[in-house]
Image (cartoon, rainbow, N blue to C red; front, side, top):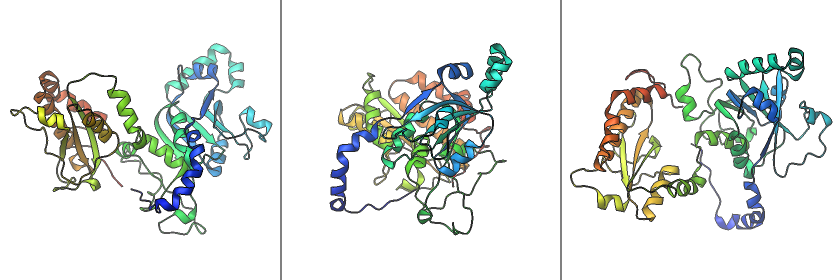
Length: 390
């Protein structure tokens, strides 16, 4: 968890007033320009890969540009980034280090020269075979993306590509580092992983670099890219997302399923030792709660704060007088992960039964559904597979 201390609002008021006229421009998305013929030939509808690698600093861009066997797929154009002054090589897909461009490559796909030599049919067959294995896509961003535009850039680019795992390469100034060591005397490389990456990390393949020390703050484009993967609906957009989705559906009662980190929990118990699932209900849900069916889980203890999309969904229903409840599980270390999944399933089944959806509750009671959920989380059986939290 990263904590930043903000000065008083009086100190920042002049800066905010000065930034107001340009604020809307920071939301303008980046534009991905693709070679449509090549995209269709290699992938079909849209670019797809097993691993997406995005370079955001000169060192990482130089590293990716040096890789042989790249096929240029397109480029990313960003607002307020001028192409003036770029070399002619930038348009050919092999830009100079100083060019302000962002190129997207497929690694290991047939080059145009190979396609011409092999003929159209052979080239398409080789491309289909290569695309079938997933492969790797490279994004080399050689222009700076200011912090205010980073989130919009990340949404635009990552939303254009289907990928199984993403690797972001970035840099940070030494004065922001809060760990042991001296960057002037040694090479220092660290890693940060999303929760999904930690869950899927094979035990035979540890993290490629030590975890970033606690207290170190990463900002700008690398942080925006990682945040996009960790939280597909960021806190600032959660309310708009809730309005858009819930406004399209007519419902009598809504059940939202969410999770919260253990450090935000303010009640009794230890999330590493027991399964902890709690509920929050809107006023309308409490009034309509059948006396024969109590709440499916204990009420969330006072002082515990739930944020993000789950809170936005529940708030949307609360202010409109709609019946809704939130089932939130407290996540920590993984010894109880399979049991936590079962506890959530039991609470959801109770909520559905209490609202007259017995058939759906019965589907949760079957062992096949839980077994499929365990497999999706990488858990073998009821005891295997654990999450590793740094």
